Amino acid sequence: TLREDCHPLDWGGGTLGLTAVTLTLVPFVCAMGVAGNAMVVLVVLRSRHMVTPTNCYLVSLAAADLLVLLAAGVPTVAEAASARVWVFGHAGCLGITYLQYVGINASTGSITAFTVERYLAICHPLRAQTLCTVARAKRIAASVWLGTGAYCVLWLFLVDTRETAYADGVQVQCGYRVSRSLYLPIYFLDFALFYALPLGLATVFYVLIARVLFVGPLSPEDPGHSGSAPQGHLAGHQRFSSRGKRGALSSRKQVTKMLAVVVLVFALLWLPYRTLVVVNSFLSPPYLNLGFLLFCRLCVYLNSAVNPVIYALMSQRFREAFHGLFQCRRAPPQLPPQEAASVYYSVQSLVLRKGPLISWKLRRRHFPFITQLA
Image 1 (cartoon, rainbow, N blue to C red):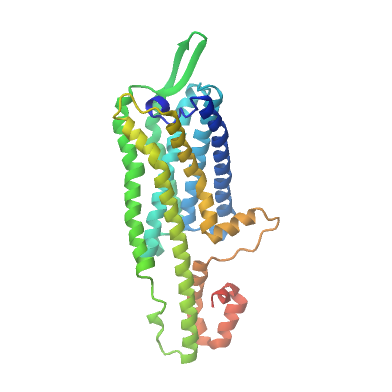
Image 2 (cartoon, one colour; image 1 turned 60 degrees about the horizontal axis):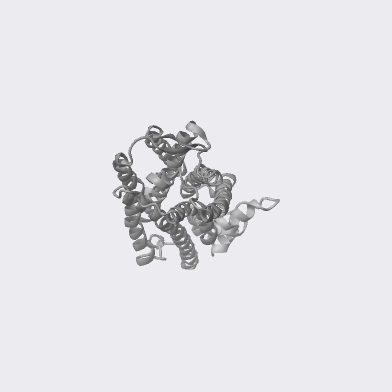
């Protein structure tokens, strides 16, 4: 267990004060996290314009966070309320442990997937046209879940219930099947695959992304539009093109900043628990300060609960989508800035050929969202 052997199941309070904190803060954080992540899934599934490759990975991340909150939060509260007694039986010990690790590792895999997707979309946009599609994102997300599910099967053979007889009864706990020292290779493999390597990869990719977006942004001028079109038409088109590009670039920056914050929060909030697991693998006896253990698990729960708040604060599209969930009548879908820009480029040749009247009609009547960029 975490209190004795650094296992994430035994997260109940050890004193009256810690039990009170566990029974108040943990349910609150978990309830808010479950509601928020469920909203993320709903807004993406119910709105076609929200179904993007990045959002497919965010849905995968939300599902993983839901699994962590439910598979870890409910046992935590139950154990704290029952004086650290495991009440879910042998099957619950195996199943809940397995689901916890699947959720934890699937969340890391989803973060890695959207980091790679952002890198390709911004640093290699031509390759991203074929690699970063919704269909491919769905397949990658499914592969993340299948891979982590297969990897975590080993935990079904590493944990078991343990009974301790006392004068007034028998205490049942869910813990390790063998000695804690034998789990050192598993802990280091888990630490490397699902924390250190993903964060190292994310650091490199976001540095490269920042160089493109913030150090050397795309030029507002489009050299490919210097043909023989009439000068007045070309000047108006170049102004329109420049504004469309600036809108698309601003949207990319906004999305990238939001995802970078998600990665940073993940790194900071998982650091106490990951460090504790590694350090306690070398200590005998392990570090067992119950207050610090409570802090570690609250950080893990907060990490799984805070992402929807980040989306709402940093993404206008998610704010509007969340607001739409509480409206009685669904608003007509609006294309996001990057999609508006892409539609603009698909009609730009017609605009140039037909002159300002057709240009204004296209923008005003058929593509009203384009006039907002112009």
